[in-house]
Length: 394
Image (cartoon, rainbow, N blue to C red; front, top):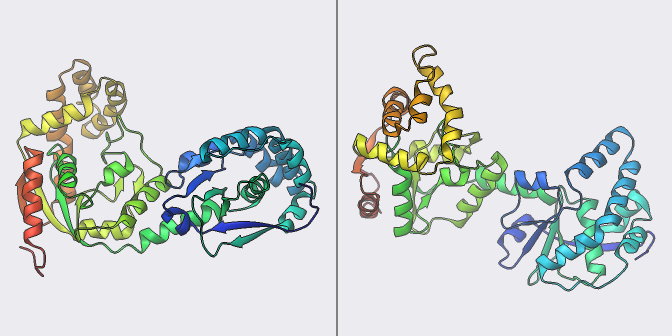
């Protein structure tokens, strides 16, 4: 594949085209940690460099020179190229030819970093073909352009680059979030344990596309104990998941949300979504204390593995209630498996006062009994649909 400085065309597609194409296969060439923080929906991680290799190359680039970093990247690529091609072939359903892959990489990279920058010319495709294999790195630089060129040389004509790489995709996500205009919104609110998420799930079953599950997208329940039993997403990953949901639209013309704080765990909602939650029609869910306790015990303690995680988090709440009086009290209730008593204390002493303080100024248009989530969902859907077309809700 030695071509000196002869120009090689590297076709690219935009993030919008990659995301919206029904048969696109996205392959993320970034390191595992970069991929874990966020990635395009459905992407496969086939890293050209692992985390340690990427860190070394980055250090060489900053402390020595781009040429030294390129030389190290070249050595790593020659060593790993066969494994990389085989993995891409597996993911793409492609039969890769048996060739001297390291030798081809050596020849291709012979011109050096500046020679390759000149040789690999990006070309935007006027039309995206069927089943494109979209490969990308951080910013659509040499990491991905060289792999696309290499794969096309081996016969994978469907290989294309992502214009601007992940960095451009991130801009695409943020534009979608900041430009979002919410439809008429209804917001489920109520004390902790009334079953807001359970009702939201039942509404979605009745009317797919009507709801937005923010806690599900964040994989966090929103409270100080909300990460127990979950794997919370990073801000970037949450943004990606939320933008994807919002792009799907609202086929019923309305949206039903669960009332949240501006932050869900460590992620922050974009301003347009926050405005929809604060400015929507507020619906209060109500049920008995016994039912609320039952919901929380099942959700947090239905899995035995959550006890250790709860034991680590409860001291924070104890400190907020009173460092002397409450020290160790909640943890002891958990240890003794006095679960219902523990949850009731948490409600009365911590969560209910906190909720009333943060949401006491809201005006509720209607209340619903959430003891039976399915029935509550049916009543809410009926009520919402009866009010379509009204200019004022009451």
